[in-house]
Image (tube, rainbow, N blue to C red; front, side):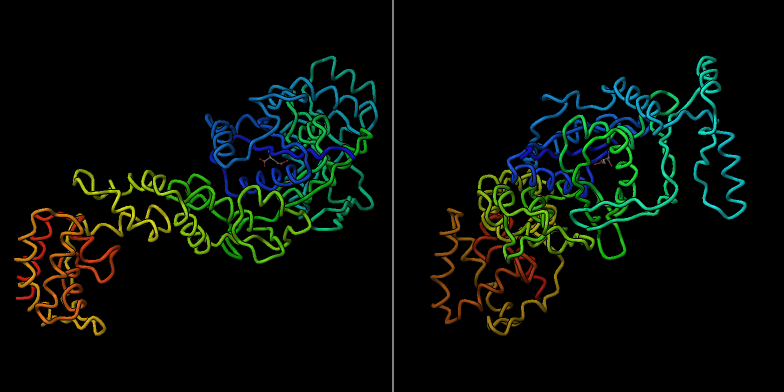
Length: 482
Ligand code: GLU
């Protein structure tokens, strides 16, 4: 059996779209599952769309995600070069071969002529397709124009009658009337191939067995197949992938800040969680399993389980999955990743970040939400004293008014401000006062945090704030209660 060869063929036009990462992922998973090769090819024939630095973004993103390619521009392989602009001299001879075979033809129509005919067709309410005008030129006429150096493009001569069909691994039997096919340009006036031509030549020359790409290419595929047939080449297996959507109607969009891989990494999502989740947007394992390492994905992946309905990228689900990954993360790694987010509100305060991280790890869904959760440590919120009320803890404003002034000297008397010392000092007093724990600890925690719910309890927060700040907040709350 021939070895499976898949490819990810991005155009370097900017950041990596999440849909692109998912396409790369599926190509990678399938190649690895089949013991095949995953190839990276940079498609930069459309020079106008190229964004400087975008190739590095592609490399870095794929590498960061663990989608390591077996062949590609930077590492080579037996089928290089892997950048289309470095292959540009290779395409024209293939186009000429098709001209020889009568499957393609020179077209000398100028932009203006085409625009005129397009306008005329549209005036009649017709959709303009190239009208095969230059197909009628004689051999001699063509040669004369070529000799005179008249600029030309080379077009594919598509059939106009009948149907073109193929079987897609995901969408099944696909059929389009040939009357819809436009005689697409293969080679542009500048001698560069179009994407439509280059991708076929490259997929063939690179021995690609499975073409896995977005479903926007479903309708172009009959044209590509005409090319394969004209050359007498074997047609690859097609696996078209549904679009990644925000919801049923909306695509992920740049404007909403949810389109790019980097948008999510910048917001503090973990790449492992993102990859795990992305794998499930458009594919299902056929079991209840939701958490997958890359190796597990490789083992579980099956093209037959790719979905035909659009993949909905549900951020709420992703947040949940991310929180599960964060909770299971190595503690030191968590501390390292959380530190810049702690710094956003606590820089320069000398707070014990290790202790804070211990309290925050299980409460972090995405890292960018850390600052809002710990802001109370930096500045005492202006709270409503009604939150002293808690039935279960036997606390209310009157209780707080009574116990906080009793607590103050106890806290003032602690010299060695550790969590244990604070705990022991306070806990020793509670039975003496004849109180339940909640009736002291609830008011204390509210008094120094101003929040009904906090990471950590009264002792942890007092410890993190330090003695001076704790006492300052205690006094302010006592005054606030009047
Ligand atoms: N260069 C194309 C793109 O970025 C890739 C399409 C394909 O996979 O053939 O959309």
